[in-house]
Each structure stands twice: as structure tokens, then as C-alpha cells.
Image (cartoon, rainbow, N blue to C red):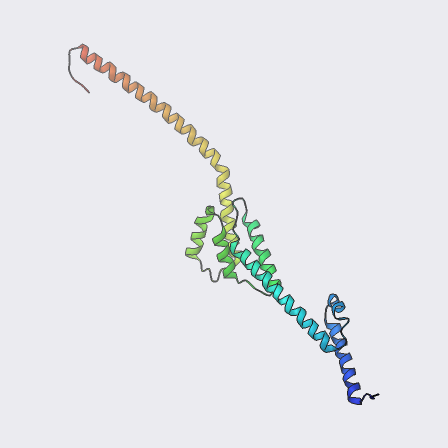
Length: 202
């Protein structure tokens, strides 16, 4: 039987100390996964393998998330608040995977994803603002202001349409009466001149 030397005993003590530190540092849900490991090296290798797997999964999820971000478009019945909530959700998830989307990217995505009813305000923003320094909140504020104006205009439009309809009907009625009087008077005039023996033709 080989008696353990002092060096071996010291190594065992160091290993146990490292194991204790590792158990304190790792999350509780991971402790059970390394509970059967007998040395600190085994624990470290297990954690390293698990981390590589997690890293690969996170990269795959981030790639899927970025594809979703690129394809994201605002629907016709969406409001600016509803659509920007979707953008913010993707931003939050991306940060959990270690990726940060800068403000310029988010602003351009927002302006490119809104429906055609925002085309006037988008053109104005792109023409008169610096998209590289604009924040997402600033772009959202401008689009929401324009959205409220569109809502007010939509509420007023039935009244305007009714007035235009009434005006068109009234004008058509007046025009028909005017043409009737002109036609009848012209007929009577021609008849009178013909009755008098004149050949003047209007």
C-alpha cells in the first residue's frame, strides 16, 4: 500500500477548496449537473461543455430573432404604440442574448416598416433630420403626432364629404334649370324671329 505524501494531501485539499468555490459560484440548477464529478477539473470540463452548448443555442436564437426583426412590418390596423412594442420586445430579447441594436438601426427600421399612410411624415423626417443621431423615442413621437392628425382628419372627413355631396347636388340642379331656361328661351326666340319672317339664327 502506498502512503499518500504531503504533496498529494495538499493537492487533495486544494481540489476540495476549488470544488467548494465552484459550487458557490455556479447557479443552483447547475449544481445537480456536476454533483457526480469527483474533481474540480471534471466540474470545470462539464461546465465548459454546457457553456459551449448554451452559447451555440443562444447564437441560433439570436440569428432567428434578427431574421424576425428584418421581416417585421407594421400592419394597416396597427398603431404606432402597438408596432413599437414589438420592436422593443425584440430589442429586449436581443440584449438577453448579448446583442445590442443601436438607435440608428431601430429608427431606420421603424421608418421603413410603417404603412404608406405615413409616407409624408417619413419623407419629411428623412429629408430634414439626421437619422444617425435621432433616437427611437424621437422618431416614435413624430409618427404618433402625425397619426393623431390622421385620426382627426378621418373623423372630419364624413362631414366634408356630405357638404361636397350637397353642394354637387345643388349645383347640378341649378345647372339643369339654367340649361332648361336657356334652351326654352332660345327656342322661343328662334320661333318668334321665324314668325316675323327673319332668318337670323343664333
